[in-house]
Length: 231
Image (cartoon, rainbow, N blue to C red; front, side, top):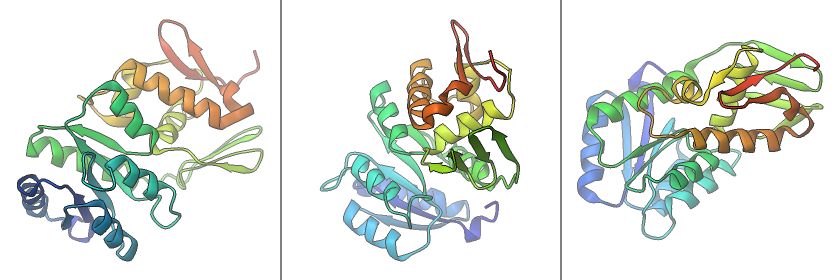
């Protein structure tokens, strides 16, 4: 997705001044941009037009940003849409809630144009990876290229963040990663997340992996590792 001319971004933001400024800044980077003031019109556009990334305000009239995210991730035709949440709500609980719903990034207002452009590029760059590596650990299968995980041949629905964490750990079995290293690896520097955010992600990941959760090991006082050997 390095060709910005073919990358389509959608903005859902009710504040007219912010919406117009976002649209102007993003268009100046070469992306195709469509903007909407409410969730209803934004969702209608997304359902009828192929888009790559959504910039989503949380505090919207009518359908909230959280509900829009939930609707998108439950729709088979839209679930792969990338989402960056934009909000003035920057508490740890808000960040965790956004990530659990499947958001790919979370930017707290106010933010600079350079930060926004860098985060957009980072999210698109992560998805651009075409690694075809397939990892097999008994009942657990991880297809890096397809972003697909299965346990006992049953597909497991992971959020983007959960998959990125599992992918990083499983490709480096035995290596211990601190929570800060995990944040930097999957989100980039200066991401407004805490150690507890990663802990929440790990809890969700383990729950979904069911019997395969045994591979994710907690190293007390340090962080996590992927263990592919019997202990």
